[in-house]
Image 1 (cartoon, one colour):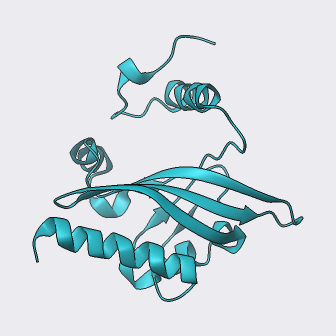
Image 2 (tube, helix red, strand yellow; image 1 turned 180 degrees about the vertical axis):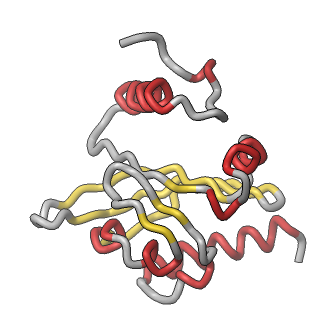
Image 3 (cartoon, one colour; image 1 turned 90 degrees about the vertical axis):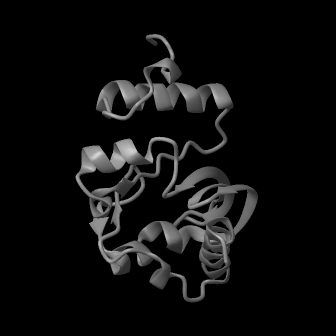
Length: 155
């Protein structure tokens, strides 16, 4: 099996398992780190699998997927229900190991095990609102691998 086919199979298994709430945690690294605005920072596969976000997930649809070698991107629509019972959905872009900045992330983090994932949802937001939020986060956090050309002017 070539690397693109293997990557596609891995990503498919992850989303299928997550969607069906069956075994998908074994596909993650033991040292996986999750951080973000809706998730308490946690380290390790078990902490990630048992994160509150996944308790909100009622379903998901992979809207788009792009695979090239060991690199993958998925645009996923999550159907969610808040703890108070409000239903909503959120489109999330998820990169798998090979975003064009992956090598920068590894260099800055020191090792793949030190990488983190962050969720910053904006329910019912427009593309302009999402871009503004991204730009504000980049300005505030100043990530070393950020592309300054993608940041919007001051707000």
